Length: 329
Image (tube, rainbow, N blue to C red; front, top):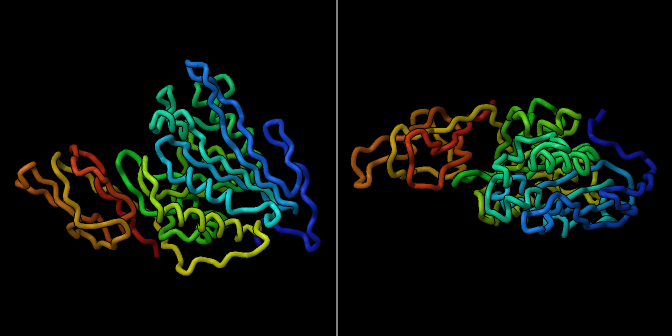
């Protein structure tokens, strides 16, 4: 039997959807802001949410962005997606959360004001740190209402990522959703303690992580692929009245990846770009002193594809410079 949520032969009318103390009637949409906390100035910080509630029953899914406050591509993806989708053409319910970590966005920071990583604070607590409380709010108001989720990220710390889907590719349904998305690569990755994906998985929710682009920037190609990819996943889950064509090319599967790190400090000159194929031992760049002398070669650890790289030409010893993914058979 198909593992996706099934619609009965006779479509059933959706029920009223409750969230944050608000009721959303079938075939309607609602924007709301759930209070999170106050800044020391007294200004309220809220969790903005848009609910698109189809007239016909179906799965419930969420799309979240800016769990890390400096990862902004997802904010635009979420906006464009919500603008594109209409309740009359949706089966089930989509919850869009375009800016989870508003504190980080304001401060142009990955972290919360308490210096905690929100994506290491799930499932959270009502009485814990600020990060823990926000994590708990997202879990109770959004995640626990869903069967599926897509969390949007970019590279971190001056790094940029090739558009990719990460998740548990040993789970058949997750893998099929990842292929439906249509990113260049899908990467099998274990969950990390305290992450949103780990907390969702613990209660039986399937989650895809979309990584694309770099922090503090809008990358239009990554945004365009994000919107079309999510739309294809919703179509695969039978949440769209009009089916969407699958991607033209099958994503490449990666089960192993490794960062090529700087063995010395210096100036980096790369000879590869995101998406390039490399072979074992191939020279992919150099690190030199400021005069270009005393070069040290950067070499690919194995044959594969470049899935991430540093954008900073100044490297310290031990810095990750190029991320190579080994293609799976």
